[in-house]
Length: 196
Image 1 (cartoon, rainbow, N blue to C red):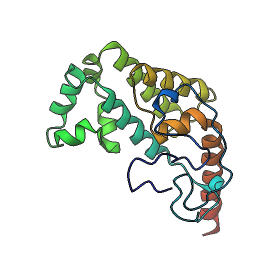
Image 2 (cartoon, rainbow, N blue to C red):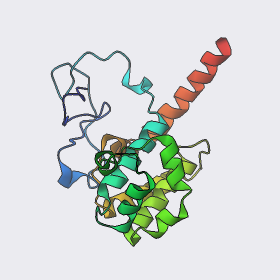
Image 3 (cartoon, rainbow, N blue to C red):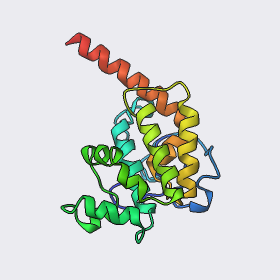
């Protein structure tokens, strides 16, 4: 999709979501569907190697993106952000400001009750919603009410003034496709594993 050159405008492979139209984020949910992935048009850099409906959206990748957006939206002079800097002294300030964490670090913060005590009310709501979606949708457990849980997450991220990244866009506009693709990819992995 031409993601590497920088701030790609049309980075969704399923629709024509405009990543630069920030005033429309969290407002317009249904964007025009993509009719094709034509190189040179709508941020498409090269011919597609696979069918867009067979693209696997890894839950860990989504989780890392949600953590990144949460930390980037935090009050940089607030107690919560300062606590993260003190908790991970070996991570550079630049990486913490950009919210660049790995899975084990995120799990460590999930289990740290003192971190939650340092968050303001808006940050705490977003953090609780993030933890809930991670546990009941992006983890091994798939809750039947995942759509409501994701909606709470999206509303809390909107209140926190998080920028809508591509990962948040997938949860906002393509949640059904995300779930369908995820289930299809797990089924394919199981069948591939059974063949070997």
